[in-house]
Image (cartoon, rainbow, N blue to C red; front, side, top):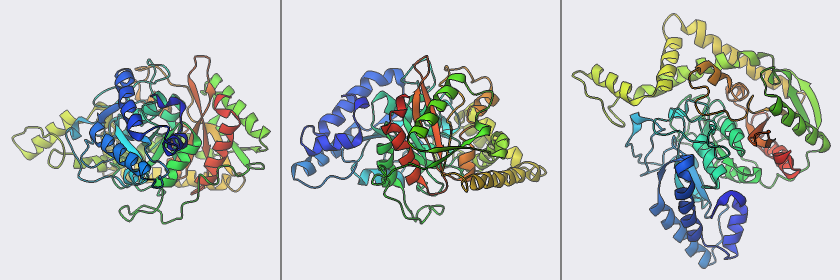
Length: 480
């Protein structure tokens, strides 16, 4: 059974009406993975025995007439930088090969409490550092829409799994666009919540002040269902926000007429692909037909986004990844001295992109350069936040392309790190400001490749964000 043409709420309704059993669906999911994942290569680890046990438990509950949870029997894939007890967690890095955690991330635990069934762990760029899922230490994931193209990154495995129909929902993590870019490239929905909205407990840290767990799905309603389950305060995470979670699903159909939508000049740059621009402009016209009001706005510090992001993210990464020294986790390199053992472990375990970012971050934090680079980047980050706060005094939502281009060919940008970093230019200011954003499909280009449109809201305005996206989907915007 391919899950491409079914949504989570419809699947739960089929279970409730006894038209399908959870066991049948989970069995068919693994058959589909066997059939398609040899080409797509989204999955790094599978857990069929555990999933079938959970499926049988769900079937027993249905047979006894117990009420079903919101995601009962829904197959879910988890990005391999979130820990799941007794399942391998590698962050797609050789340095963590063989690591089996003894606990489960809060977001994953909440999904399971809502009845979701974990079918496996999916590929990503190593430690979530990358824009294409080509930087994995194990395999390159391919875009299900065109196997010669990248799926985006770093949550490329999560997006590819949903797009190929081997899971209904996936969890990814977004540090600089790592949920939204793969969602745009693969033609699915991806949400980056407000910083602190979803617990980071059990998410392996890359940039601690930027990382957020977010859902990927085929529809906005599924994204809302999933976010409603995983959001909320968690005392295991000191950065978790103790703020009430809105009824995202219940609010989806509230009217959006009169919503003010801001169009930032800085996101419609000369490098923006013509076909992407054309589809985004068609999306704007659709919103106007729904009664929304378009307004030009300015986010003047956007031009410093790439430099600011890569200074802060690499500085935090250089600190976070210092723990991988061969003592606590994964394989250990041989060495006559402790320093030699550290050096060989890291040399053998880390990939090229991770080493590049550790070096950049260590340099930015080193004596004599801290004030010139890292401290200055923090000040610019504050200016970007003020840009957004000023904009949200005039408009309710900001609309931009998710990426300047559609999915490019595998290997096309691997030799030019700067070109690769620039592909994130529209998705890195929102994590710096800590605000929520969503990427939704906005038609396809002449090569039948998906175009992604991004909507951005103020802090903790996920309910508005999802509602505006949902009306776009209902009005046919996904195929505009």
